[in-house]
Image: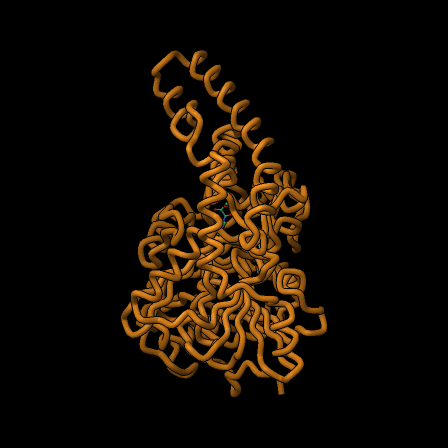
Length: 460
Ligand code: IMP
């Protein structure tokens, strides 16, 4: 009974959407299990570009069931926008199922995310400001609004009222604080205005209880045909021998528990979380595939030991078109970090790796990969350090490998890759201890090289 989890192995944006789209060919059900519209997948299909934030990438396959699992936080306005967008392009969304237990990102979550970041100032995390953290916080506080609440106006009103009150209070306090900051900085000064941009004094119409309830009731009407008991749906599929793919968003090093806290997202993007976020058991998982770029990128703040702030980093940014799908921000770029990747492999107990964007490295010679870190005091770390102070100041030590200066975009088999590229992939695989099964050599769906004999997901 094959259950396959796909996870990001770095800091996100590894190209999971394309991998999921390819592996969806062999899956019956595709389930997203965490995160929200902080994620973004771009899939290029026959030259046509599709961008998703919430809907699982498998939606392009009409015969697959696509599930938004209970572990996802869902902004209903965004989801309906995606559904409408797909319909306009003639894509059937009848097979989209939404967990009744998934939590909703409410307008106050988005306001609080922004206000929280403004308040943190220089210490800000660089969130996507989509309300992810405040929504998961409400879930843990048991003040969350769930998808099923949309179907009962009375319950919805009671729950929103209970959740809204502390938010109004918090936003008021932030507003007072902002006024104080503005005064200190001098009325109308640049700093005062910058602090001002996102938090408004006047009562925000988005926080009006009556209109919020009304709007959400109408969201409920539109989403109702998709709302389902998605855990049961997964069990039925697995129990009848169908293939279920669990699609992670964000990535291992952004994991709330195991990532570079506090510069992380507010969910658990690692493979173990698929069980909670979809409602299946650990023994339902047969395989875990990690997705890593041939180099490394990160958006938002936080430690990134192999970051390059030079011409090579710029080249990766431009050739790799490293701009966020969700926020449009430039991604920070750097060398592949094998210390971090080996950590991700073990943490997720990966059974295979996919390396994406190999083509971006063309012409960079030599290639470097981080194989250990050295602390300020000279201590050597072969393993990913758990202590954030060490990680923040760790200097990577590199192994140099020969680069390649030929196009790899046209390669469709391992033999068509230049020997230096093959050696680079072998080095990665040997270092982290799992086989590489798939290599991305360009943005299009067909631009991949399968490695090994069996490019099938389904367990034997
Ligand atoms: P949040 O998830 O919006 O709260 O943002 C927390 C951190 O995770 C920030 O550094 C974001 O840039 C990062 N992040 C969130 N989602 C993604 C993603 O899909 N790709 C890459 N980084 C992400």
